[in-house]
Amino acid sequence: MANEDSALREVDQELAEDQQMAMFRKYGPAAIAASVGLVLAVGGWQFWNAHTTSVAKEKALEFSSAVDLLVEDSDQGRDALGAIAEDGASGYAILAELQRAASYARDGERAAAVGVFRQIYEDNATPKRVRDLARLRASYAALNDGRDAVMVHLGDLPNEEGPFSYHASEVSGLAALEARDYETALSIFRQLSIDLGAPEAVRVRAEDFAALADAGKAGVNITGETRVDDLLKVIGAAPDDVDDVPIAVDDGPVADADEDNAAGTQDGAGAETEEAKTENE
Figure (tube, rainbow, N blue to C red):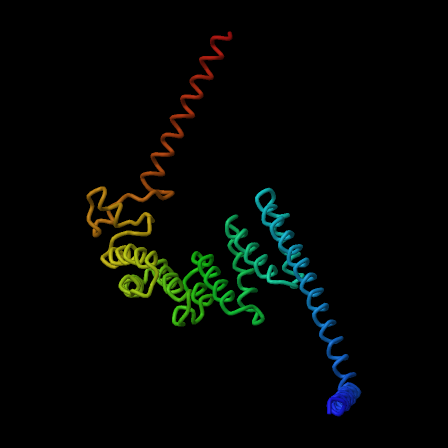
C-alpha cells in the first residue's frame, strides 16, 4: 500500500513538472522579455532623472550667476539673462526674462521694460499666470505713458477672477487718477476699499487713493503742478483779476525796465573804464 502511494506521488510530481515545463515553453519568453523591459525601463528612468537633475542644477547656477552679475554690471547681467531666455530649455527662461525686464524698470528704462513684459504676455506658450503677471508689471511701468497705454497692457485682467485682478483694478484706478478722471478713480478705489476679497494692503492703499481722488474732484490741486488759480490765491488776487497780473513781454514794462538796467550797467562799466585809464596815466 505504501509503495502504491509513493508511486502515485511520483506520477503526480512528474505530471506537475510537465505542466510547469509546458507553461514555461508557452509563456516563458514573454515573461523574460517583460522582465528585461522592466529592468531597461527602470534603468532608463534613473538615467533620465539623473540627466534632468544635472541640467537643472546647471541652469540654476547660470541663472544665479546672471542675477548676481546684474548687481555689478547691469548690461552684462541682462546679456547673460537674455542668453538663458533664448535657450528656452527650462523654466529658467521665463524667470530670466522677468528678471531682465525688472532690471530695465529699476534703471528707469521704462520703454525697454515694457517691451520685454509685452513679449512675455503675448507668448501663448507661457503659462497664463506668468502672462498675467507680465501684463500687470507692464501696466505699472506704463503709468507715465497715459491711461490708454495702461489699459492696453491690462486687457481684461481687472475683470477676471484671478490672483492679480485686484492689483489690476488698482492700476486702472491710478491711471484714471493720472488722467484726472477723479470720478472714475473714486469709484474704483471706493469699491476696492470695501471688498473683503481684496488683499489688506490693496484695501488700505485704496482708502488713501480714494481720499486723493475725492480731493481732486473737489478742486484741490493734488498733482503738485503749479496752477494759475493757486498762485492767485497765494498773492490774494481773485481769478477774475488774471488780466491785471503783469506779464513780461518784449515791448512791455518789464522789457523796458530790463533795457534801463542794461543801459545803467553799460554806463557804469564805461565810467569804471575811464577811471582806470586816468589812474594809469
